[in-house]
Image (cartoon, rainbow, N blue to C red; front, side, top):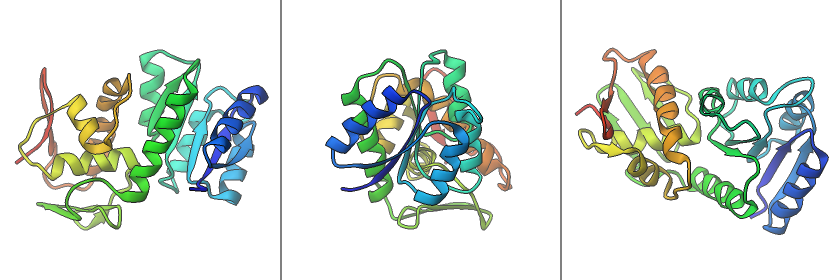
Length: 226
């Protein structure tokens, strides 16, 4: 295993608890206690995944997330005491892959970390290459192009788009979309799907000649336009 995880939280007891738990599971860890330090550690250590608190001194977690997403696709899981739906949507809109609310189960946290890392390493299930009009998805290269222009997606966004585009015309419920893209389901995931789909739409619409390739099927879920 030996994947490296950057733990970012201004509470030392929380960092130590996460560090002990993750190292027991075979992961190596790096710690940071504010956003500025986290950016420096991210640059130096190049972690495989980031566990990120939101409310921190010097630079908050949301700004850290925004800056990282300008340069990297590294999986980010936000761990925060902020539990309102709007807080979660803001974090996901800035590029986080998952959002866990404090207090939380360490067992579930490890399961989510393992699931996200597994998806990044193995690639999403399905065809190696999907071509739908101007959209080209390569699961081996983990790349997306629209009108030959590269599109940068987070791991979760990539998996969801691949699941939809590989089955044009098929309607996915939110839960089916999560399970098809990720292979695992955790409580609260359904409420994050709309934010991820919104991010995907914005990114692919920037260069797509035909807009709104992902259609909303009201009361059901989403489908990729056939």
